[in-house]
Image 1 (cartoon, rainbow, N blue to C red):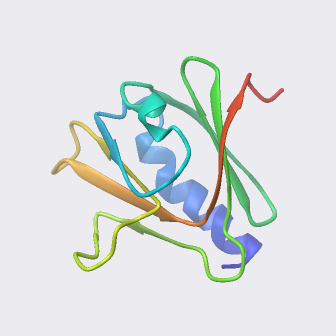
Image 2 (cartoon, rainbow, N blue to C red):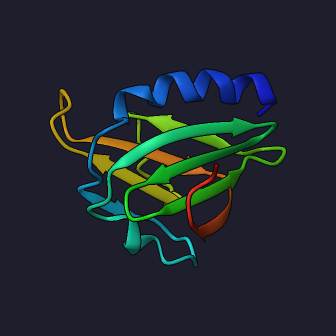
Length: 111
């Protein structure tokens, strides 16, 4: 994954802005359960890092490293994602899977 790919990802994620996370799952060691019920407010990128800013002043920082990947509405049944978000009121309950170096939750909003 290269930096320009994250700009494309940011555009693909725009449809989730303003949507509430209805379910979250994955094998992350971070407290991802804190994101369930939160609303995605902003999406920012910097290099190979994407920041997801949620209601409740929660910011996630995800660095895609050399082999990071994401999948939108295309889950792989034989793999457990690092984190998977599900949003309501899409054509189907929309899973978004993120496989990256999940750096966890950061308190406070970015300015």
